[in-house]
Length: 400
Image (cartoon, rainbow, N blue to C red; front, top):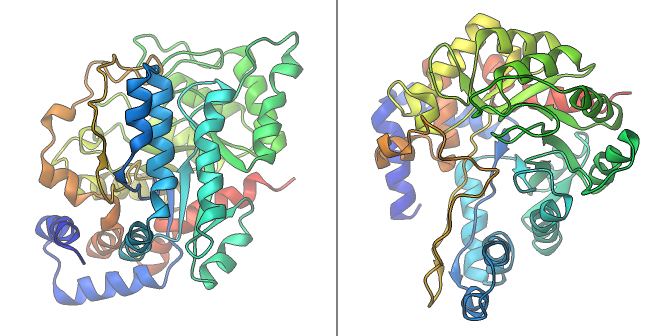
């Protein structure tokens, strides 16, 4: 355990203050369970990246520079054997068996999605001693037995064509991305799109008629409907019209947080009735309250006690940077991209402390389990929360 990781672990211990028996039991339970992050980021690499300097010198645009940086962090940085070793150690430290991996950029542009999707496809092909890419739930236990980590793909939007002459044609790319391995898609990403309203919009108009057809095609194809970044009305209506479970993969309970990414009790009940779950995220500003691991556990406990332990999971929306990306040139200043909409009121990042964020860091996954033991959940209930509920839902989605 390096010094930084020890600091991260200590931040969680300082929040929980577990006794020795609870700590030992939680860590053992974590090791012996299937741990599935409902929405996360695999650890990103770093080191010297000359390609970014070349692009900045050539006057490349923002998107080209960002894509090069993402490819380096996610993929080619691991050409360095030392970085590979660190990657393997990070997965072991976290005890995570599978990430529902963010593998497609924000929005509906299919070409843009392919850049990130290609990186995670390539890293699974490249680091066969560490990763395997999974496309069916039945593959996951065998991947774990082989001592590897699974990547299960999701995209931050539904891919739509630039120009479509019919509704049916507009839906074709859902099947294309399914065949490329994508198993979950966001209906919206903060802003309004053709499908429905995003969670950060001032209006809350709900699901469009086209959105209902998108959901029907996702149900037919076997792609999980994710409303994590959708408005409350869009989320509610999606859960009501879907014939398969709907999830909010990385969100929070609205009863405990006023953040625009939190879901109201009405929405959580609709998600429950669909057979889905709400994944609690590891972003302190979304959680509010104490904005630390205890706040994260408060949200999990609230949903588990009020709506049932079968309908809550953990989708950290977090990862860990194993090393900084080194460049000779400074990144050019740019405005926030349209799809991210991080400038919406109430984002709250300026209120977060380093210690709060460290306590919920992706590397502290074992401490989430320790905290659930501390809260009085049974081993069976905890195993559902830390992975079993995700496994159940992704199996149901692919059932015809």
